[in-house]
Length: 249
View 1 (cartoon, rainbow, N blue to C red):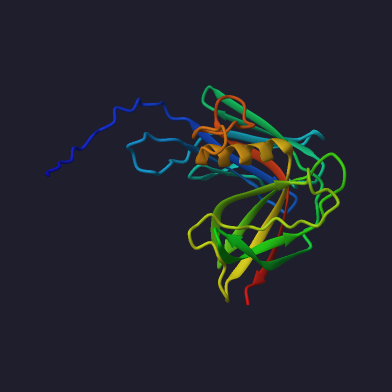
View 2 (cartoon, rainbow, N blue to C red; view 1 turned 30 degrees about the vertical axis):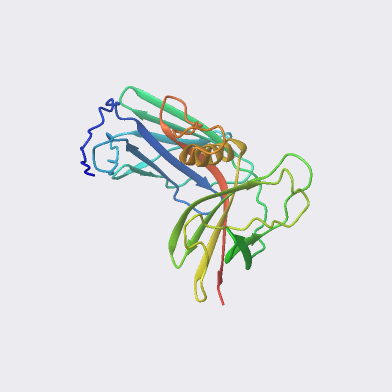
């Protein structure tokens, strides 16, 4: 028996570049940044160029607004804005003739009490995972969370998000279990967890991004709905931020 191979070049349609905007305001001292890049073609290098010359403004519902400073490479920075929980913030980005806008309300802080290590079962194998410990608020409205996990200084790229819908009044037991093949923590690892209290639109964004990336459920791979108007990809998030760490023994 014989076989042969053939190189196939897919005739993918060329899509015009799309702006990607990622902006954050937190309850921690600024400055806060807005990153603006552009998408590239499928066959081009996976490098997204920063966009210069944009007019970027962030304001709040109390009449304050600030024009951000262009720091280069598509990064724009505040100088005097201070995020406060409970306030609503709006973002305006003007690039040439294109205008993009978004708003986000910073929820009230749910205190991150501690981080501990526990054992979980992953496909029949016991693994060590970190758990952020905090008390979910009882009743409605629900609280929404997003977590960043750094292991020995490296960001875990798993998307971690949860809410208090079915756990109101209970201590959180949501483990940050990685999707990687080596999903266990190891003795000597240093783990830092950032807990963000986010609003409902941002929770929906992370949930849809996770489903779109994996094609899970009824979702198909694609771009998640954004809270940005005007056709840009990305998000604008006003959230609280707390970080605690632990060393694995």
